[in-house]
Length: 85
Image 1 (cartoon, helix red, strand yellow):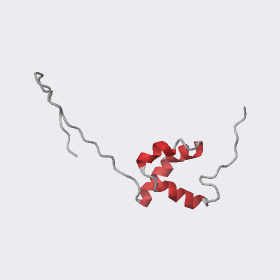
Image 2 (cartoon, rainbow, N blue to C red; image 1 turned 120 degrees about the vertical axis):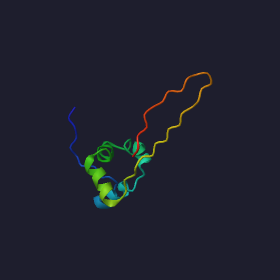
Image 3 (tube, rainbow, N blue to C red; image 1 turned 120 degrees about the horizontal axis):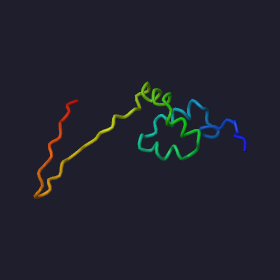
Image 4 (cartoon, rainbow, N blue to C red; image 1 turned 90 degrees about the vertical axis):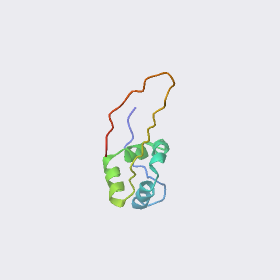
């Protein structure tokens, strides 16, 4: 089966520049859903160029990670090395 090389629009009847700006403003959490829309969206959302475009326009987000140790009665706590950022 031959692959189609037909160009698909990001959003039907919307100029590409405007469609790209819409996707740029898409929340990072929504990328997991957005990349299921179609192959073109997936390739775009996962591309390095798209990330740099978001970064230039100020729409990148720094992830926040929180870790909390849980004390289990009767066990000796394990001490992990802490890192400062």
